[in-house]
Length: 148
Image (tube, rainbow, N blue to C red):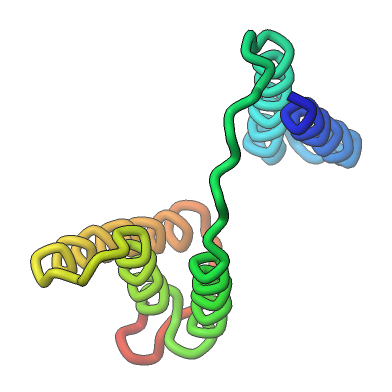
């Protein structure tokens, strides 16, 4: 319960800090950031309310952390970030997506699942790429190999 209260309080504090730092740009410019801040505040209030209203006192046991899995995830994240600069967003993201999917499964990779994971990764990553570059007009690192 204490951790939930602390987390909810931090969410609300972050919301307040960012809300007070807003500047007087136009209404349309601030619409999305304001919406995100309102959602963040609602999530903070929800976490606090859940912690206060929980009947069992929040005594669920914490799972044991597999340090090898955590270290592998950190290394993968660093390699993904480095890969973006070398081979671009799309290729590095598809590779990272497939590796994470295999890490989560923890069994031997089967060709059918590998193909499925790769297909899902390509669709998701290309979709994100086009949303960022065409809709939001945010440039992403581009590969010299395929131009994406």
